Length: 219
Image (cartoon, rainbow, N blue to C red):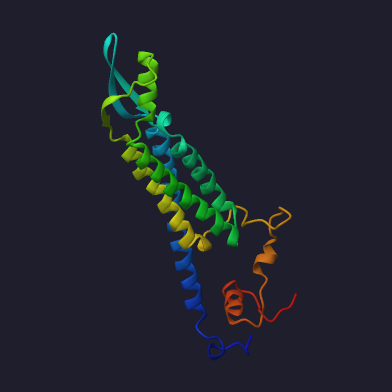
């Protein structure tokens, strides 16, 4: 104990404070990513079921109103939102390079859903098909087309998924993994194993002293 002096231990407290700040920032970025990803996916799924385009077709019985939901126009936003939700969960379970790959999939699913929603906003194919069925004329086309705000709501919500993926790419390395409390065999780590350290490392000496242990005791 008498051989451990302040001169031989270079500012270990600063390291601990830096680790605490990093951990705090990691928790905040994780919470933001989870919130953005979950909210974005939920809104995409909701908005895709709403009416995106409206129009009319004139047949034998007169003018008939037509409308098409987002899912009738394109199923891509819904499918990619589901992929985004799965990636959001998987990014917590993954580690290292695997986490970065999953985060990339999360970002790409958001970007793809936003692109599909914007392209679908001006797609009249679904309304034209309705016009043909309504009139019995395969050449019939919908007229007086209008777009609602829902495809744009879908695109904005998809950008939240993209943002979650970008946050995961940037800060994911600081996030804890779901299985972080367990060893590879699934057993909880022993209490002594958490305390074990290298007696030659200054930070481990300080940690042992803080716990009231003798760092020179090898037992």
